[in-house]
Image (cartoon, rainbow, N blue to C red; front, side):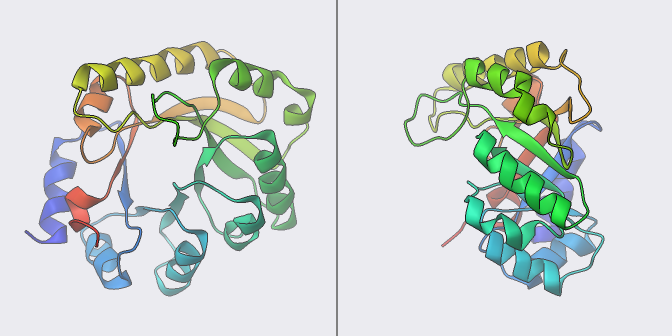
Length: 220
């Protein structure tokens, strides 16, 4: 099946309130353009330089989401254009994003990454770290970032009960944290679910799914 058909098939199954991020990492611009021509406007990349190269070549009505782990020294390459940074997991990284957003005269939207999996390799804040970050003075002084939601990645497992438990845990944290509304923090988005588990994620309350291989095919 073509990228266009894959995309339209997936979109036809998604509830209206769900935002679809087409994960286009490692894929050529021609593949992204096929998705673009089928109506997709939000693309997710996990390498900042690759995303910047694609941004330069592609139409300017695209929203670019950084979905990979972010190194502070690379933030400068995406600060002029990135729409949403998914994996923010430290105050240090927020400082850097805030500094470069100010330099570019922008407010950059971010999701805080919460650690919900039972795998050592996943990044993220735990519930206590999240609470202390959101209530810190340092955070409240940052005027050029906006925390618009939380994201999390479930354990890579076939065990649906475990995945469901982790997604539900993130939803619970989201509901608790949502009460805290400040100028730079209004939680509306809960990003969880990828090609293999996005339907389950939606059942558990996700409002944003990241789908790559089901649209573009496998990666080499």
